[in-house]
Amino acid sequence: MTDQTLCPVARAEAVVGDRWTVLVLRELFARNHRFEEIQAQTGGTPQMITARLKTLEADGLVTRRVYNKRPLRHEYHLTEKGEAFFPVMMALRAWGETWCKSPREGRAMKYTHLVCGKPAGLGPVCESCGEPVRRADMVGERTPKYQRERDARWEAFKATR
Amino acid sequence: MTDQTLCPVARAEAVVGDRWTVLVLRELFARNHRFEEIQAQTGGTPQMITARLKTLEADGLVTRRVYNKRPLRHEYHLTEKGEAFFPVMMALRAWGETWCKSPREGRAMKYTHLVCGKPAGLGPVCESCGEPVRRADMVGERTPKYQRERDARWEAFKATR
DNA sequence: CTTGTTACTATGATTTTCATAGCAATATGG
DNA sequence: CCATATTGCTATGAAAATCATAGTAACAAG
Image (cartoon, rainbow over all chains, first blue to last red; front, top):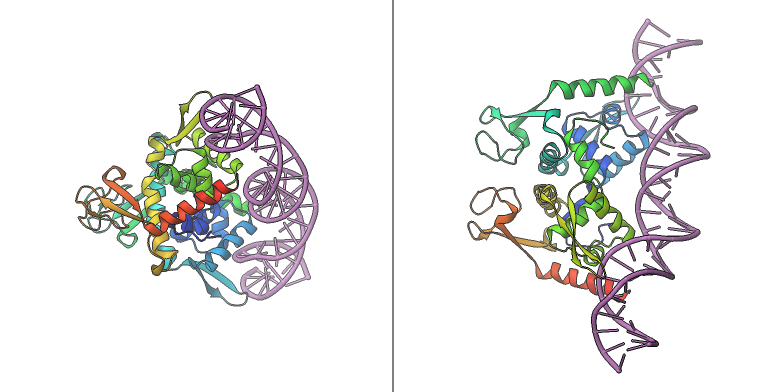
């Protein structure tokens, strides 16, 4: 699958070059660790989610953590390798906000840079203070519109079971 | 397809959430503009490449440019929207180099930051001078090993026609 | 002992992708 | 002129992935 190439983009794509995989990672970065939540917010079928979580685990981006024995239940968490994917997510987010939406639709998230206490913006460096932003130095908050969208998806999901 | 979501990651993935698409973009960033070269270096079948180039054009990342009439031949070039994808490529490259390869395999590319004349490294800011790096401010050079790999792929491709 | 919760698995239809082959339009060499 | 090469695709049928829909397993709560 890796095609035995030296190209890091090809190597990365062999792991994360799939829509569902990235959406699952998005949910994990959003601190949604349960199967059901991931399924509801990505809109994937259970087999899709199961399959992606399995390969993400095999590829070392995700670990399963028991949160309940009897019945055995797991939460899915990012490993260091998974966390390291954060800059890609942020770059993808920036591109998506800038080029895949009309400005009047509004943002999905607002990030605050804890180091300076001001908005972090979309770039790899804080738009307020110019420092490179790390995940640990930011808090993200959903805009009301996006929060409503997610709530609605959850309700719709629950209604079908 | 966009699923009518406000999430920029989902929006972006609807466009570039596919292995072949990203590999095609990689070749365009590498200034390979011909169908044949893209096919050879990505390893895709002609229909894959045709299909991706078509959707990339429809999504506004790529334009076709006539380089020869009679027979009519096109080159594929990145639009502004396509060029704007560069930070994602760099972030993906950084993650791939760091997490999808053993260090002894070596790098595929060396980038020089033209502003300071020193190596740019893997991050969003130049490792030598600390300035955010833009595509126009960098020159990339393939490492000998990676160049040989590409030459070999081209030879192998040519040999089958 | 019925209903609810969570995390899946099973199944058959549909869609996508793959490998292999071929074609169209022209340039080039003899 | 006629055969071969070049470039950029299209066609075809087999194989694999994905989808919608339904169901199951293992327990908890009432």
